[in-house]
Image (cartoon, rainbow, N blue to C red; front, side, top):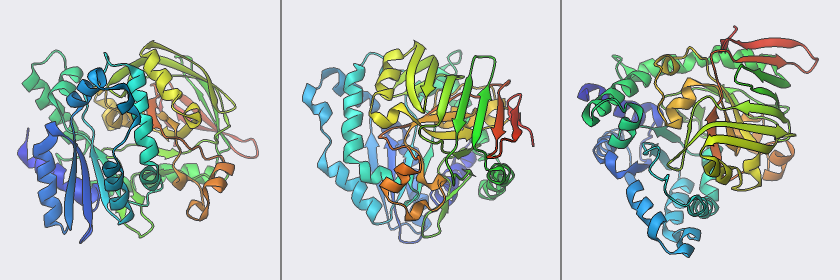
Length: 409
């Protein structure tokens, strides 16, 4: 890969992604395959004033060995020391960086019930930590770099080395690391979200109506006081950060009980090392009442049945079909990239920051406002080149928001 771009990318993550503050601890969740890049980020973070850099390594191949051979009851357990690691660092104001680079089909031979049980144990143990991240009480950022297995899935016609090189090139372009000053480029990029956010917040739509030729016919009611956000987030202390690098979306939350109709997926979903392909979900009064999938039905079923909240939506995100990542015509099999090439929805927990006054609301008040709560938050893609979205205001006025997959304004 281009080493100059690599260093620019790492610096962008530290300066813009987590925006590390002087004397702040950075916690990195990293696959073992990404060790060299993780070390580079760590060195830059220290030079930018980090107090400490703590790395939590993960090895998906080792995880697969456990899923295939481990004792049954171990999948209902979560180590106390790992809970303490995340919770204590979060409470003390640490920044969190996650490197997402999994093999999209590594777990296809694993019993989905084992994965679901392990996920539930993890979510229960880390509920406080997750709540802080979803509320932007801590700085957090998700990024990706190529691994051999992921690159070969994206570019199967190339050799392993060529696939990795091509994936590096596409990532550098998507995150603007190939520009002279990526940090400045991101300031300009974030400012560009303002037009979309202002339009959507000014209209204060009560409903969004989705339609396309795949068969999507969906009505989404938005709660009173909802906010459209995008580009960057801000902690209660005023630190601005970029939760996703790259990002091309503006997003809000649906009213938990206000989703009705049918939606067709437009891209495969990589969930827990399994692909869910060509799936359709039907909603009634917000709840998922039916679903089908050409491939990965049991994986989709385990996701939806995680808890009561995973039967509902938690996010509505708009991405123009002609956005840079979409225009690359690359199917990444990685949600971080694919969701920024397509309008998407999320099964599970909503971001409380998308409701006005959320910082002063109790969990019960958020619930009464229609904010969904769940152990899950999983984005799936629904955008197509012919997608139309119509906004309906409180007084019944219809406004065209999307036509032929793109914003109309």
